Image (tube, rainbow, N blue to C red; front, side, top):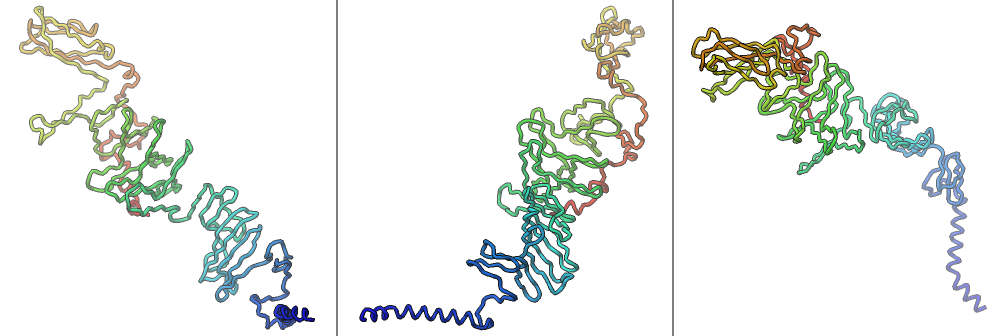
Length: 473
């Protein structure tokens, strides 16, 4: 008996606690539901719970902690709702700013949707603008099969699929405004870059720009600098071999320009285009035209200066020609100008002075290449110091020389010989004295200035939009 009393005394407190908890549980189970301290109000029949797993809606309890069929609604202010739901094609969707009280849209708000694709394998962010009926556009999307990212405004017709295929890892497309703007605001020293492009492909492009408009003043790539020693567009080809180009331009328009440079300030030594080469075999500026009617590899409108030798591997056509040097008697204040001697033939002129011998004769020896270069010779003799009425050409050019006779012994004779070229190049490229124009509308350098229309005018393609030229992004 003493042992039983001691056991009950030691167990009274735990036993009392068990009895109280049991009574509380029994009372809660049979209490009115309105008095239960529930955190969630259940409307309709509550769904089952099995082993700590719950199901909401018409779904049976699954293998996860929570299984839901239908829409999870996060109620906002007033009649605004935010939905978490499964859409068509097993797409998980989050809808925001939904106004259930206004089925035709609400002019005061727009609706956003986040769609995580399953069957369609897309991720997208969509938006329906404020006002009017619901009409969503996809604004940002990732194509799962390629990983390509698209940024555009694409009308989905409120469907699951997106009628747009990103053509690159990042594809940005806009109906108006700038597609991409890159800005570096780091003012510290260093070659910081607003937009950087790089390609490792042997035929790739680090950056490529394309203007597809068929009218207007558009540029595939535009460059602008405000620095006092800056460069609007700069290109570098760093390969040590091969036909590489720092900047390449191409145009397919019948009045287009592959590369255009313009120095638009009215003072200073500014340049529209500068070309240079550090190679001993390099070319600073290269122009190419395959030949035929009416085109030029290079066209210069206005005074053109060449500060060193000029080599022309072809025929020079000009309206006039001459030389200009500092005047030998007043070099500080005057020029001395001379005109070229022109001929309808490819004429070479040679002259000199020879002294006749005791027989009044002389032999004028010409260079050993003379007859290889010239044919159809013409002569002129002038006595110096005394009349020589019998002075004449005793023998024409033979063996690259000719003979004079009939002179006064010991006196000088001035001679002049001309010949017409008959070397291989001259024979293949005779200059026609008279020539019909192949195209009456051709703008020829041979026209008088008042009849030669400008190919590149300030009021034309170059400055069609001066405001655009000065704008910053």
